[in-house]
Image 1 (cartoon, one colour):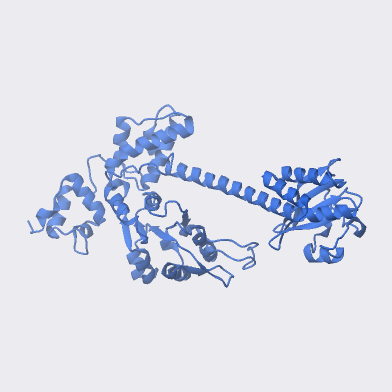
Image 2 (cartoon, helix red, strand yellow; image 1 turned 120 degrees about the horizontal axis):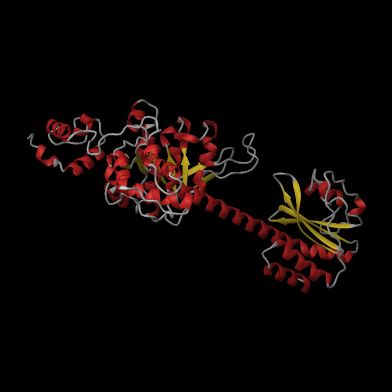
Length: 493
């Protein structure tokens, strides 16, 4: 290795920015060889174009016009390492020869491909016609190729960081939280049983199925499972199965190879690969079509899959947390959901109570959402009054926690950031049903009568919950709130 090559590699190691790298390399070469100018262009394979990333020269680089003429053979000087000019153009730049030299560049040009691992990443062009210039460009090929690849990776990392931060901000906005590690409101009251089950299952890798109404906070519970597991440092990926077009389900879940279908212009990783080493949250899993259920079962059984249009088998280590608001047992009985997949994803079910079943949490949630809405919209915190909390507690909340957050935000806007206008915020909502705060969906008398008939049994087809048309966990929570001890009914008394 010549002394110059060693200096070139050291110069590459000194810089992160590609412009600074090219300037430093050119300065080194110019100490020994008279290069008029040096131009580095990145090859964008998807868009089939060359983008200028760095230029060093005495004169400014001429601006490329719309139509760039094909360079003449006498403008390119070939050397032994590259071979014949025509062969090089046909092999490396089929169909893009006209993009090599920007319009306005005149005189002889030395051009060389910048490749990493046999993959073309760009070209370097230098002004001059001497053998010394050819030799210098040849020495620059590997250092410049690596610098260009490093620059591309840095830009990709910056793009991914920006996208991740945007996703994080969007998530926190949706959850009305400042940080994903914020304490879950209601964990010590209405969600005590839920969080107890989260603590039980999180350290394991068992699949979890979260059952609950829309807007009840299933994603919050799924994240709690992830953050309390050994996978907490791995990715947490969320996929809404009900929002994917049927024809794209396989591509979304398992990825696809370039050219596997009309719009597959590049290889793409699916959600399972993106969640490798972490947790994949399959929201509304009951919406998956039958064909996708079969392929999902295979991944859950042996952790392997193939991308759409690919032959290679990929292996992933992913923990599945699924969620749905559907009656899954009924779907299994009706043949709308595979029984074997149901058994696989429902190893550890967690039933999330509706907001109306945990009214004691409403004041804390309302204060939380009011503070967040006030700060986000107006830069100041807002506080609901006693009358506001009483009114909010008297509402049925068919949209659950999500609806409560929306009402509080609407109330903050109606109050211009100074007060919460709860009454008008609730009033226009279709189907709003207010009732006295002390009233319950089932009276004490009705619950006790059902317990007496069921001889203290709560769950099962002959239990009190079935007789009342209530969720067993919701019924237990309501009985604790009312102070009803179901043990005394076991003897039929």
